[in-house]
Image (cartoon, rainbow over all chains, first blue to last red; front, side):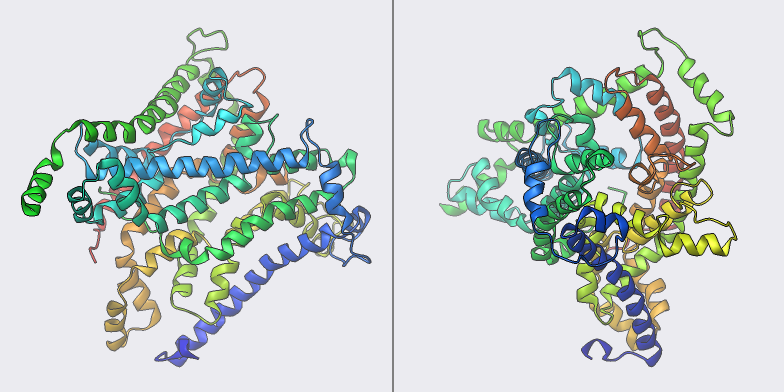
Length: 285
Length: 307
C-alpha cells in the first residue's frame, strides 16, 4: 500500500493495469524456466509427443546421461564446461580490467592523444561498420587464434562502450584520494590498484557480470572461432543440430538447464548491482 | 613538511616521472594495440577485400554482384534487406514502449521488485532453450497453429515457422515477446539518477503521470534517450530476430545480420569473404549517413540537461 501513497485514483488504476500486463509477461518468462525444468526430467518421447504435459515419472537420469552422452567432436561435457568457464570468466575479467585501467589512465593522466580517446570511442560507437567479420576471421586465423585457448586474449579491450561508464566514474572521483596515498609514499601502480580501482568495484562488478552473462550464453562467435574447443552453448547448438540422429531431446534440455542455472543464481544475487550502477550520458563528449 | 610534500605532489601531477611514464605505458599499450589491429587494420583490410577477388586482383565485381542480386526480387539479399527494415521499424516503434516499461518499474508499480528480476530472464535463459520452447508453442501440433489453420480455412494445420506466409510474423512475435522489457540495465541506472525533488515539485503542481513523464522525466533522461536513439539507428542493418536459430533464414525470413553470419560460418574453410566485405561496405556507407543525420537532429533540436 506504500506505493499508492499520494497517488490519484486514475494513477492507481493505471499502475494496476500496467502491473497486470507485466504479470502476464513475467509469468510467460517464468514458464520458460518451468518448461525447461520439467522437460529436463521427461523422456524424449514425452517431449516430442506432448511438449507441455508433465512427465509421468521424473527422469533424473537425464543429468547422468548428459555427462555420458553429451559429446561434441570428442569433447565431453566437462571439457565444454571448462571451455565455457575459461572463455567467459577470463574473457570478461580481461575485457573489464583493461578497459577500466585504460579509462582511469586517460581520465586522470595527461599524455599524447589522451584527449582523443573519448571522442574516438563515441565515433566508433555511433559510426556503424558492417561486413568486417570476414577480414577479422582471416586475421585471427593467421594469428593462430582459431581453436586456441589463447583466443581469450582477444578480450583485451579499451575502446568499448564500457569505457564510457568507467570514464564517467573516474572523472567524478576526487584526485584527493591519490594525493593522500602519494603523501604516504604510494606510486601510481599502488594508487590505482589499492586506492582508485577498489572504489570502482560496484561498476566493475556490474559490467563484468553483463559481459560474462553475454559470453556465457553466446554460441555465435564461439561457433565460428572455436569449433573444436566448444563451449557449452556451442555444444548445445551442435547437439541440437544432430538431434535428428540422436533423438535425445531430454538430454538437450537438461544441458540448457545446466547452462542457465549459474547465470540465474548470479543474476539473483547481483540483481541490484546490475540495475542501479549503469547509466550512459550524452553524445557531445 | 606534509604540506610541502603535498604541494610537490600536486605540482608533479603532470610531470613525467619514470614510474608514471611506465604506469601510463602499461595502462594504454594493450588497448591501443588491440584497437589498431582489430579495429583499424581489420576494417581497412575489409575495404581492400571488398575491392578484390579471391586471388587478390582489383575488381568491382563484388559490388556489381550486389546490385545485380539486389535488383532480383527473390534474391536472398533483397529479402534480407526487406526483412531487416521491417524488423527495424518494429524496434523503432516499440522503443518508446520499452522506455515506459522501465519508467513504470521506477515508479514502483505493484510488484515492481518481482518484475525487475523476472524481466531479466530472457537475458539469463539460454537462447536455444527459449527457441526450442517457442518452436513447440507455434509448432504444427500446437493449438495456435491449429487455430490459425481453422481461422483461415486452410484445411490443414500450417507449420508457422516453416511456411513463408507466417514465418516472418512469428519471428517478430518471438522478438517482441522476449524484447518486451527493453534495456533494463541502462534505463534502471538512468531513472535511478533522477532527483526525487524534481518529481515532487511536479506533483505539488498537480501534474499527472503523462505530463510528469513527457515534461519532467524525458528532458532529464534526454542524454541517454538521444544516445540510445542514435545507437538504434546505427544498428539499423543489424535489426533481426532469432532468425538463425528459428529458421536459419529459410521461408523468406532472412535478415542482413543472419545473412552475414551465415556467410561467415559457411566460408571458414575457404575464407572467401570478398562479397561479404563489399556488402558490408555498402551497408556501412548508408548506415553512417543515417547515423550522422540522426545525431545532427538530436543535437540541433534538443540539448543535454545537467542535474
